[in-house]
Image 1: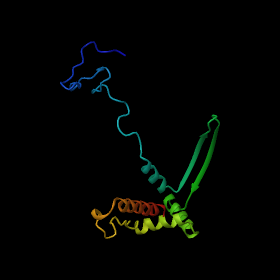
Image 2: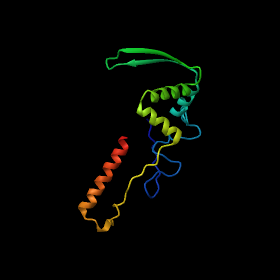
Image 3: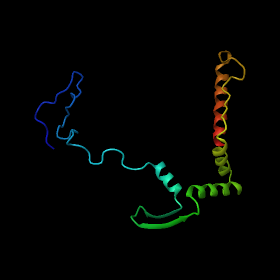
Image 4: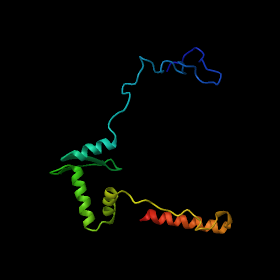
Length: 152
């Protein structure tokens, strides 16, 4: 690395002055630009949307364990419709067979998630008139209620 022999120009706050850097040879300019500037590829969502529209997917997955030994798993998924429709059908089949989480997922997607209600009042009593112990008990009660809702 070559260092500039000139003293680095800084402003009154010690920052580099505009257009100056500690290493001018590495500073970006119209001539010195990264080769792959910008976004590198698709997002996970874009890949999932693309896969969801597909009617057939073939894949090879190479799995290497901690000892360096590799396995290759090959697979193919085909559908007469899209993968999204296939997944929806599988989810529906799971729900019909009694899978509670599948039922909840379908209802949440069709009806929207139900509004979550948490009583943050002091059950009609003025908070300023509550003792510290009553306040602490009410806080614990609300936390337990929120935890139970989360576990449902």
